[in-house]
View 1 (cartoon, helix red, strand yellow):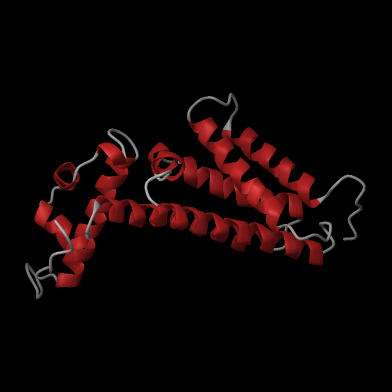
View 2 (cartoon, helix red, strand yellow; view 1 turned 90 degrees about the vertical axis):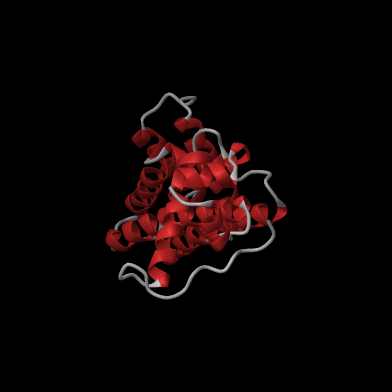
Length: 219
């Protein structure tokens, strides 16, 4: 079926069309997290199965989305937004903590949020890979946002004399790949460590990048 159908307008049951549409969208995304993030995965899910899991009809699906890829696109953005919000809220509460404590707060917030639901990890690190050029572009764009966040923190640390002056974009890109890879491997049970140990290791890695051997803090 090509294109979205037009959703009914007007109030029904005391609720506006916008409220009903928002609820349907939430139900479809919740169902997608269940199916894409677990069994059978994105590639094994049909529109009929997603609609049934959401307790809605296929017609209602096409009122909200064109394809299952559109659902995956929206859900990937939502999962990333949850993690980013958790990190930004944690950093806002970190105030003027020293660099080591500040990055610990950052990675604990990120790791706790991402690993709080194994389906989020599978969706973000497995199901999204290789679906289409559009989703690959989105995945890299979201990674770029995390790189920007790391660079912002690094540059702020440089200005405080807590990190060595450097263009950290390349290092931050490599580091984000390490973060995602380690968290994914930990979630599968391949890494024998607690989440706190994983966070501590990530903090050590980042501090090693920001404070190379031979450099002396000026703060």
